[in-house]
Image (cartoon, rainbow, N blue to C red):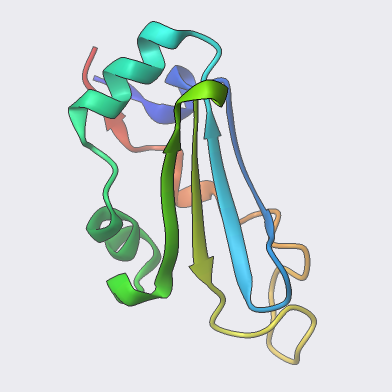
Length: 104
């Protein structure tokens, strides 16, 4: 088993407007991307579990084959820049994805 941060080329997050965060996972090897996709390790339910949200707060979950990537958009609990917001740019929200185990 390998942690996703060692398997994927890029794992990142950013704001997708003031009320959503987008998570991106990008691969540089088509075989690794396809292998990860076929394992079905990452699902809407898994995202909900990792981020402690309900599945309906996962607004988009897309495997985008031409880019060898996965794009996930989730609702923010607090709008960007509001009192109590801990990550105005949404740039630190990818951390829960990093240790997902990938079977090699």
